[in-house]
Image (cartoon, rainbow, N blue to C red; front, side):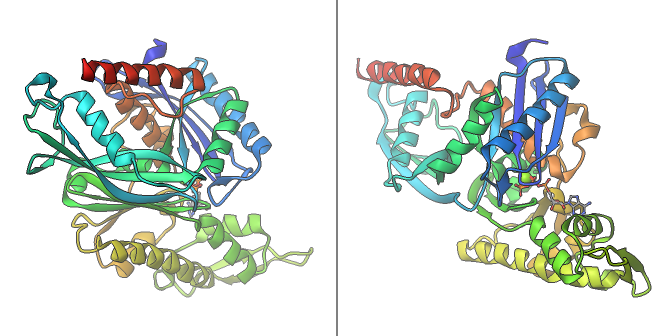
Length: 413
Ligand SMILES: Nc1ncnc2c1ncn2[C@@H]1O[C@H](COP(=O)(O)OP(=O)(O)OP(=O)(O)O)[C@@H](O)[C@H]1O
Ligand SMILES: [Mg+2]
């Protein structure tokens, strides 16, 4: 296997840590060649709070994936989420360099993105992504790729994702301690969107909701480009907790009940069905109506959906997502989740599973793998476009700064 064709995604989730190894094939697509999963113990609400246990889980997942693929991994594209993530839109304007008869060059595009990024952000935050939405050359808007166009003024509309420096550093540190280098850090909902959404949905307008154990992530695409992203620190763990308290049962039993018998809409469950519920403190287990379980889950999921709906209404996106909603992440497995979301959002809803990859597709064939597969796809795109991640090690950062300075000199002389 040629090493330069290998791209690795590392999804550090609150519930599970997942390493997915992809190999770029001859047709420019990607085949999954290895996967490793291990339970995650060191995160809360999407943020690393225990470095050591996170490192251990990464090591375990890595070992499993390496064994399956039969190769050693050195670097990975790593996901980031958590309530500290803040996103906003910005714009940059530059004069097109005169070097090529007013033709927009790759360096002009780099410069305009830098200009869009030049905004004041608090000292304790750093920019994770600058995602171009559209370019404007002179007065012509809606341009996706301005390179080669003629004009004197270049504008870029961008979506900027920022995160707390400490949270990003803790992710990097736990990955490094597990013996891996970080190729780049990628916002988790962006990863998920790459693996489950179709181009048509993105063009038409779509919102993707990734409901994991500790976070619920939202990304909105309109006219083919990303308009909004956010991460809410609430997820499947809260549902499990509600069940544990509501039914007075241990957390592990509550998690089992949710997975085996849970339903997001109480009206879909028949009144006659009974379930066995374990008790705490050595008491005997009890039998109760399955509908009671759904009655505990439904209000919590309604709360999650109404928080997301508020976000969308605040940004004015609720009327613009003509393709509706795509739900992914482990909680998308919950029975009745689409029905409940359709009622809350009053728009079409589907469950999103990773598509557009080859190889061992059976092992990643579930909504919980949307982020992991998406990270691989992000890496493949970056690799094919020759983009280098800003979070690569210091030595490489120095090389990329030198390369950028070379561009500046080229622009001047
Ligand atoms: N069949 C199922 N039915 C209901 N819930 C499920 C099912 N399978 C998994 N879940 C829930 O999905 C959640 C885990 O989802 P996922 O694996 O996407 O989380 P994660 O990526 O580790 O966490 P996060 O992205 O929030 O950091 C857990 O709360 C789990 O209980
Ligand atoms: Mg996740």
